[in-house]
Image 1 (cartoon, each protein chain N blue to C red):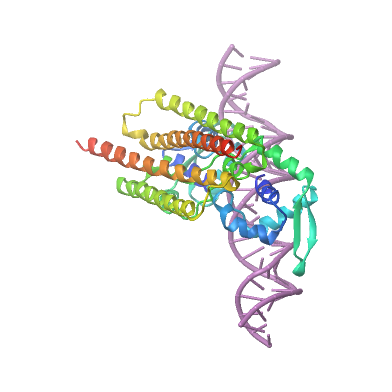
Image 2 (cartoon, rainbow over the protein chains, first blue to last red):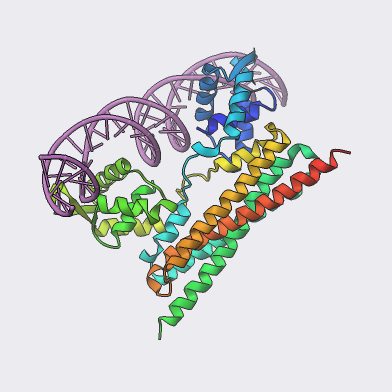
Length: 177
Length: 177
DNA sequence: TCCATCATGTAACCAGTTACATGATTTC
DNA sequence: GAAATCATGTAACTGGTTACATGATGGA
């Protein structure tokens, strides 16, 4: 139930069409809550049915400009302050780690090495985004905070992979003799 | 497509019934890839249909003991070494952070404080698990590694929340005068 | 006029959740 | 004999993905 609120959140900053929102989802939003085109359009119709948003203008090509309603804003605030109904945390990567003893040593090591390098790449990608903007003004603080979260997560992933590789090597060496 | 491989992974360590696996999912597995009872039983039937596991014994109360097949083990190894088809990363918490400018300062601060305390609780929970076992033998290394991953993630979350609270206070103070 | 882009929608499918349903066996 | 536990399954629903479909408009 979160794409609903992602869309609502974007519309709380100003009215827009599905097509407009889609571009935001493809850009900044993709790092936080990805969505596909068909899902977004379907969700906008549901939001309108629920009365949380409404069509305020119809432009060329059937373009529908949506705006958040008062009840929509209330729902957004409710959701923001009630983090109880979130989907469970799931990580395919962590699941792989958990099951990694099925692979021979070399392949397990390769896996952890690729974890490390992917985390590094992702970290550099986030750093580029960070350095491409001026975050001094208050406006984008929470976007900056979300970015910082990603940055630190990737840093932690890197360091974890280092730890795991060291431990793995230590243990495999010990079991040799 | 990952519960499939979670179940396959557990069966690679030895044959078991759906009921047996369910207990594992409720215990250790829940932190890595949660699953419900009905989902698990359905998935076991699909795995059997695909020939990746097979019923090796039928016990009392219709208990079906499953074992992994050769093709199942091959599929597990294939999945472990091909991390391309993973579901997108999604975090409701990060989405909330991203949209937090909709809330007044005090509520945003409260949100970040609850992020910090929840990460702390989760970290302590992981520490208890860590300290309750002897991880010296090689057997459970990858379970230990997954745990360490969770531990470090929660640590990073805590530190991030601290950073965000400090920054938020600094910026709100600055905008006062 | 043709092409890129704008703009929305539908259908089929897979994954996951909640609730319900059923019955056998062991233990007290 | 009653209750707890063992053991599996189905149905209805929500959320998300992929692929397909359709057409309008603006600019070269």
